[in-house]
Image (tube, rainbow over all chains, first blue to last red; front, side, top):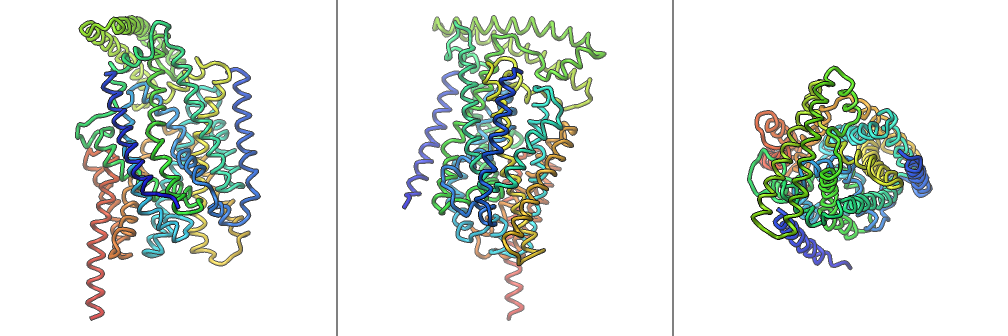
Length: 30
Length: 567
């Protein structure tokens, strides 16, 4: 049985990390 | 183009048709043809979902956007992971449990045949037109860069796809999508590697990124709240959430992808693959565009990227004006190159005041080049009479043809073909499924054996292939009207989503409520488009909310009147 709720949480955590990384990328090179 | 590159494109086209046709034997009954007998693994379906969404417009238009405007467009995709979770929790289990063939079939289970037929008809109308555009946009560009006619490029894209989709069904669509996705990503990675190695020896990647950043091309967040601006953080997270829920949750070309999985959880996992990978992939595509910009900073840049128009201007009555502009352009690009080199040099010296001064210098030189290019584009608009002409879509293909090494040119052109084909195969299959299951089997011939339906389905797929090719050739003549066709779909998207929200979110909603709500939603979107300057992404929100509000009011009224009659 797949732990689908755990996967939703993982998507959300990675989403926040991705956006934070993109924001840093923007600030670093602007 | 080198014969080796032509050979690579030919091998790709032959191989993909052969690979799709191999799966014909697994599509002997209707559930096998349309849903692969609900047997496909989540990872293949996940790649197919991504390949379907990533069209050739992404390969040529989005890279061009990266070149001209930078990475701002990335914000458009910020809501996608959230949409995938919302859909996994809400619509996906309903579709799977109802064992439907189309998303609209579910609406008959929940409401009535009228709502199913109407939403399916809206899908057929908008998707068949946009399918033509999805073929014509790359066909027009490839015709220019490959030096062949648009009719030929339309046929090269549409014919092989129609053949393997017609015979191999959804099995062929999914498994070719998987391979096409691998080809697309390999092509993009190869392009980035070539572009990085093409930077001048004394400019490092970090310096190059700082040069791009100084022009605002690495901006990925715009927090201003402006309803008329398409690409802000807010439209990308709120309005695009509705768009993606609508696209992945109610558009048959996507719903059909995850209906082929073995279980509800596998369907969810296939959607979550996009949730993980879509933003990084889109960032890669835009970054390719940014690196093409950096490449042309240091290498001689064409003033116009469409060679056909360039030649027409050079040989036409405005040749004098064009030559004068070209001289100014050469001087301006040389000054910009020097300013970029100066910025790279002071950057390594780590002197903040000098970096800022060099940055300002570079920005001014970049603005000069941009202004001259603007004049050149205006000259083309003047000479051709096409008021909205732009050469953004030609930037990346021109770079491929003129600067990529032999072999990689073929690989990247094949990747553009793959991006187009992976989208249109899914759309042809979806149009055929909606035609046969929502109309033919529902209204014309309810009882027949699978062989009969299979024959009709293949004919329907072939019909939509021919229809889309005809629209593509016609759309190629339209020029700027392509955008009108594209927006045509956005009139329905939010409203259709609204009907599905009523279906799964509000047990009190009635069939009458859903039907009247749907019409009210479309009317609201039409009014917003006609009388306001709200960006079209927000039309999805307006449509969905209008359907839900009007649908619930009408449902309440009709239930009350039923109650009175019963009393």
